[in-house]
Image (tube, rainbow, N blue to C red; front, top):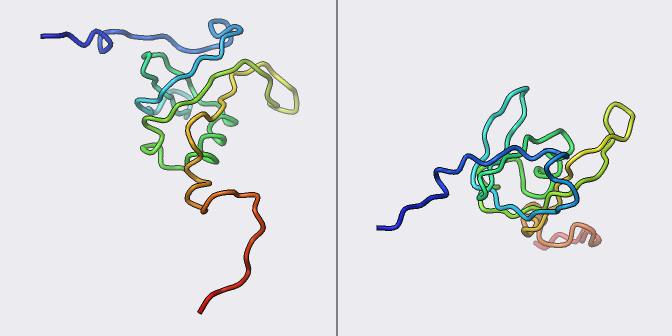
Length: 120
């Protein structure tokens, strides 16, 4: 009988030091409540990322506020800078890879002109 070794892996926390120049693609398998009132994404690799405010907003904007819908989505993690307290600071930035759920719910392209005609 095969053993699922992955469930025994602890993984590690993503931070700028261990991310370096890599831009890993990760699939979300769980969302947990972490310390300091932050959500934590848990990935198939068993690695984790605590969501800062900017990344939380990105997740909500593209995938909605129901964290259960984030399970199975793929995102890319890149090193970059984000504004924090008026200053640009080094940060891990999430890049959406899976299709945009919120845009799909709105019926496609969010940049298309609105059609004010109401059919009766």
